[in-house]
Image (cartoon, rainbow, N blue to C red; front, side, top):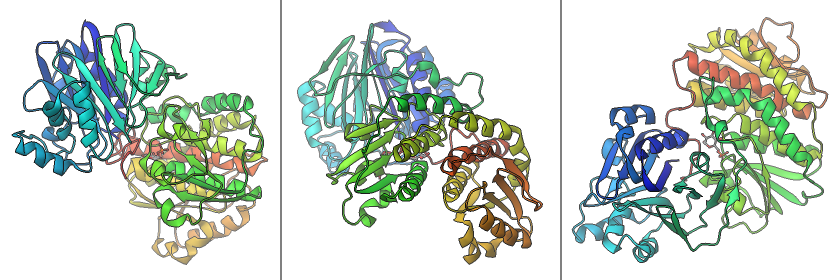
Length: 563
Ligand code: G6P
């Protein structure tokens, strides 16, 4: 949700270009609008607009700006509609101070009234703008910043740029990370745009601030820098058309690396008592998978949608397994707010809020995932959950996933043709395959904008089947496991009503259906990690065939840091 980047340099450099490159790496966090502010020490420049980074940067000539410091922002609107005035950075009354902000200020109306009485003039409808006016009011220095922080209520990660090239940075609730390199200091909402500068990255603690100028960094907080192992190249597209395509294809390798990490781990007896699993979106599906495996293994486990957790949880469990790729999803962090028991995090971000509040962290080690729709982090999450439950390293998993990928790259094209012009589709399965059906349906909704509903196949005859008429597409996830025979009966029921059947399985059924083949595994608990591949490919190719950009689904953001 909203991407922030800031840089201070000892010597004048093409800051506009550096900011543009960084913002491209942050675009998955929001892409309603984009803007930068640059200073050369004497003059400052503000440029912003509505649209994607590359378009706005070109139109507003971001790259012609040189300077000694700058800030940039990609926006995912919360307060104020999507228009140029509401794009960040926001400036104070004069063109000497600028702010970029991520989060929601709860008392901004009050602060705005206070500032208007003090003759400040506002240009936008955003909550963020109050920050820059407050800094103007109380001083662009450490004392002023502390005063401003004492007045803000809500969540924020912000960076204020002054005309002399100083950055005032602070965070509460929303993430902000900082890195020092030979020629200066960089700050951002996540490690990815920092990687080209340094891999030693410090995450500001809750409520902390720092001030940077040139190569100097003033930080009085409690955190130590950590080394992030991701390579900066892993955030580049290479020969792929989209990040989602790249990330789907990376999965065999990601799982191979992950298994190597897990081999060095010792899961012995970390699970006990009552266990709750929480997650949002795709990560909730991983939580469901965890519930299924844990229950089968005899644990008392239950999965919850993170934003519903406090309503439904009942008594606190002994352990919460929190699943979140970013580790920053507000719904997940809020769910854990008053919880005092043990937390096990499954996340891709070692510097995340979730990682910092968990007793035990399982890192996905998947490298940055930039496609908004999660793919490689999902199969990595399932793999960690498999390992946590069984204590086993499924050595053959990467090759099974590779096989599933290879078999379906071309094969899904026929299904794309069938679904391309449809407005609705069902995804059905039984048992563990319900999880895959849900994930497949979510993917289609997210990036191909086709209404897709997942249902336990047996339950589909209690309602959903009423919508089925000639040609209505129904995807069945039915590998040869304990559910196969019963799923076959449900397939018959659908076909008898004219449905167009699409089966994901180990062998084609006798019925006239379209078939997507996945390799067989003796351990059916691995099926969801294998059978989701064709569904990811299907969603991706469908999105492209329908003329959309799968990396930038409308209204969505990769990391949702609001309630
Ligand atoms: C957003 C994304 C989803 C993602 C969910 C949870 O809604 O669009 O793709 O699954 O957040 O994200 P997390 O980082 O907590 O796994």
